[in-house]
Length: 267
Ligand code: IPT
Image (cartoon, rainbow, N blue to C red):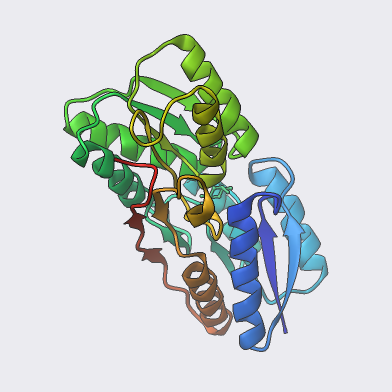
């Protein structure tokens, strides 16, 4: 028996760690895993990957690629009785999904900075077309607005360290005063921390940084990264168990908890 995984680029740390966790749980359950990369964004890119998996006769598919509720619903409808479980869509949508709560994750990170007294906070969001990036950004904005604040800057990056580095250089060059940054993932935060170091800004004495993901390497940044933890092992296990239930009958959507891990980049 075979499960399918249609995934965002495995060059990114989060999708690759999620894929590893899925593969492990599938193996424990006696299934093998076939993967198809979703190249590009949107429903057509996803449809292509699903066709590749269909041709390999997988019993059900996990989709870890950003899809709006609307696009996810269209794919699920077209799949008919073939079970699809979505890992990167809006938790408010109608399709079966296993997701970390993006609103809660964003709130934790922003709250942590507010508790430390920060008022000048810059935002570095993820890829503009990604639903999770949009929902995290919205959560940050709402939490800041509840505290009577507007972000001092809003930028977007493609989830890579290189982009975190470049966007932070732009922010510094613009001369906007800021005491903290909320960054939509740890990989971008790696580049952010490097750019701040090079500019002579001390972390966390002059600038605090909060990441998002808590990938396996994040505790080894310098300083160790404060971040929002998404437990990818739990995600992988729940995703496989839910899909297997779907192959036998019904799937129940789940929202998984996130937690703030306070380390050395905030104060
Ligand atoms: C999301 C990660 O948080 C982010 O770092 C990036 O890798 C992105 O995936 C790629 O699409 S996790 C996803 C399950 C919302």
